[in-house]
Image 1: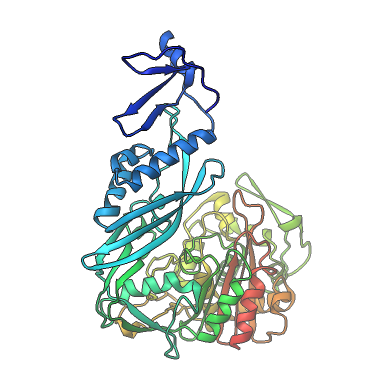
Image 2 (image 1 turned 45 degrees about the vertical axis):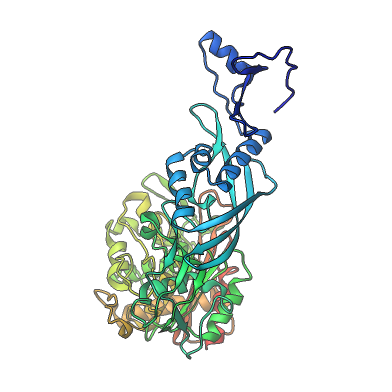
Length: 552
């Protein structure tokens, strides 16, 4: 806070002015609440009728003061005081009040760690106490101090995650009898699936409980859990159990997961910091494995990422059906192509002056696809994705929440970008594994994790099936890519009944693109993504190929 000026005289009435800073002592508690904002300049400004608002990052002293005030007030149960130290007192008051009243948390101890700039980690120890049951709770969280623009005052940047890292804004903590009984999820061979054995299944098990807990024959226990708010429900996040005070009686839900493939998928994604993969069976739609190296969010099922050049499978389906090209047709891929004011480039500014469409597909040459844009209507790609591949209709019912892909109708340059999996197109590994599965079998079969017969749910259907000729053409270009194109290194030794497509999707603010690969081998299909990994053949390729090899 800098050096303080020596006080020459203490007044008997009114606050002491210390170098322009007013110190007010709160009734006998020995805790000072200081107006540290603006210093002497602020006092001079008040005298002259002008107000200077302090800007810039909070100082180390301000971060320490705000953190201490907030954590001390929270620990002592002084909710109003703690909330006043945040930039959203209303939301903070509601959640901090519920911390004791609804979550039944007491004996709270908060210990601040070492600040990194304006971010301060802290540890939480408390007791969950409900009726005659109690359990200890310990976790780590963090807060960030920001400066309020209106007056320059440093405050805690309020988000629900400050209270607990599993909370999203709008979520709450509740302790009581769970409305949803626990479930025991089994793999396809009847063994129990646990997060101890399969760490990335946490979100999947939460989703299975939410969907089947009330119908699987179990009985609810008492627990502390995260109850999702409206925003989290929109994002298809499931409630999460944090502490069990008494165990309920679980019901049983059998899944389609293969223990061998699931274990291998966990190992494969663990080699990359942000990787996801899905393996499924084209002939049935059964999901055999799902894994994410980032366990907090199920990117494999719920991610919404640009799929890059893997989208060229759907684009090629459209081009083949419209008889605009055939695999062997001569079709150059220029170094650049201008469309609606945009100039599109190929990777590394490559070009194919003389070659077939199959060669451009195998080399993933962008402009060999974008230069078809003038011959297509704005809605063609959207209809192809929906009607043949069952994507973008938000109607998949696999047994847990999913994002079912999005191919919006776009025009001009954005429509051209969509043809190569950029623009507004969004997918995840589940969606792209389904694309390869549809090519392999010739029919869209909605993926599922729990058999539809368990709860008699209706699975999604495609409006139409691709012709056998189109399927043959797609297999030809995908087989060429797996044997000689950008996927050849990853897919080596897996042929001949195989096909693949790589993808690299640029992301704003990200130095390296997301790397994708989707492929099939026999009656297996898989897709993976490595975020910020680089080229798909080098990053996602080895993950997918290892699983296809094991499954075969």
